[in-house]
Length: 72
Image (cartoon, rainbow, N blue to C red):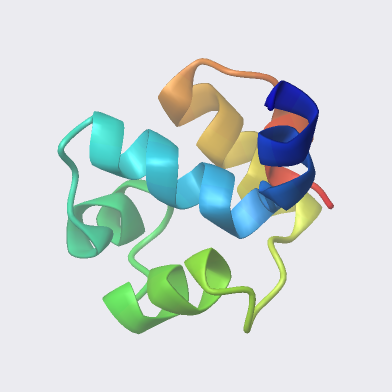
């Protein structure tokens, strides 16, 4: 089951999981990574907008995880 679950995890889904685990709103996270609107965060979580390397580095630092979690 692990391989099946891991296969379905995208960088956007990882972002959403980490954000929700911290009980953080999209707006709060947007402020933390550089005053981006919540729609920007939503688009990254839903795979509409890719997560840039620069943003992935910021997210990794905020959540204390590897940058690889946010790069597809």
